[in-house]
Length: 210
Image (cartoon, rainbow, N blue to C red; front, top):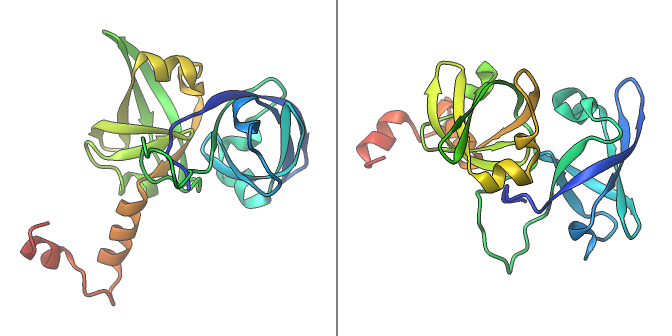
């Protein structure tokens, strides 16, 4: 479980890629302070397992499902990546519940500086748009953000200067792809409401003040 609060920018040091899988060696500093074999690390929002590490780098495997369903396959040696360790039970919870399981891949349509912020318009797949609501939480490349505008299959998020500087979103350009994970609670609620056998329906929620 993660929070979407990026701890540091890492750098891909080495990539071994096949037709449907890959292995990444990633250079990092802060997240290696207490790293152990088998730990979960979110890399651009994708939960990956540490299989090897040293003082300045760690290694992860990318299986076929992750390879095909995320932007991880586009990483090359030298690519910058967002990194976050799994959430500690005794720490502050600054973002929202993030599983590291990507729901879909979106495309950056437009980036526009506005005052001290950067607005980013992102097209999202139809299967992802169902879970997007104004003021709702969303994870873009592992970064916890708030949706402040929706227009059909396009969402708009805003980056404060710190997020723009300290995450890969600040580096990415228009037409580049991003990993998207929708709010976990919203996905569970959608599943309950659309399940024909569920007793929780839209009418039930409305009658009970939701």
